[in-house]
Image (cartoon, rainbow, N blue to C red; front, top):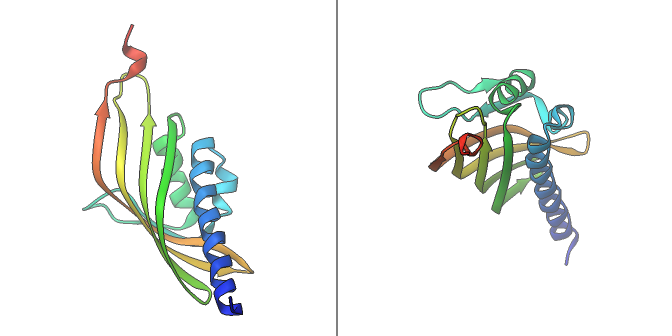
Length: 147
């Protein structure tokens, strides 16, 4: 294996670890750790068609916290398609998430894709742009309301 191939493999593994940490930090509500994975000018497009993207790491973290801080969540990503070009990379991840809000609100299981742009800052990969596209959502009654 030549040096370039090893370097690309190391980037691939680092980007997979970055996304795994992203999912875990969201589920653990580890907001400061999550913030460290994002660029300052991070852009999040996750609200669906007709809603503008959220621009800026702090604004995106506020939106995420507002949406799921009191919910129990489980985020999973699969089958990464990652292309690295120097200190920039793009990735597409198949995703599944479960969000249980409680208080009578139905829980959901969502299926779709994350499309992301990454940049290397000071030797570390960070997420610069995230677009979440949901292909399907299953709704489930609030289990806490069942006697």
